[in-house]
Amino acid sequence: MTAQSPETTSTPRIVAKRGAREQFLSMNLVLEAIVVMFGTVVAVKFAQVGQLKLEAGTSSLWIMGGALAVMMIVASRLQKTEMGRYFGGVLQVPFLAMGLVVDLMIIPAIVFVAIWVASWWLGAKIDRERAEYDAAHPDEAPNA
Image (tube, rainbow, N blue to C red; front, side, top):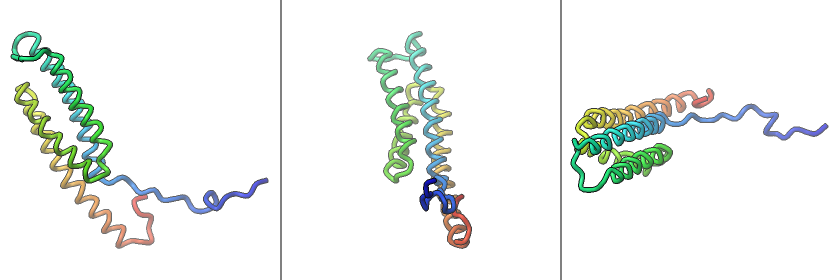
């Protein structure tokens, strides 16, 4: 019979939850990436039927839309850091600019940017309230 290590016999380790702002912003970016891909498909189809005039071919639309979607997915994973949150914020500009290429994209872009701003503010508020609660109740498991 082997002796158990102190880690297995002690109380379970408390794992703090991810921050609310991190979760909100990350999910928003993932959903935006999906909308960007759908918008890219629409832009390519508009270009193929002649409703969208392009100097370059449709491959440039695929590259730009795909690159923006990939950058949004990468940014969603970087929301733990302040720089990652600013990177996600900067990506809102080309997302809004898609509305200049495909008119139908301006409404979803405005809605998602508004959700981005609300998520930034509301998530920070929730994180602040969690921290205040944890400070006021140190004997309870924080964020367990």
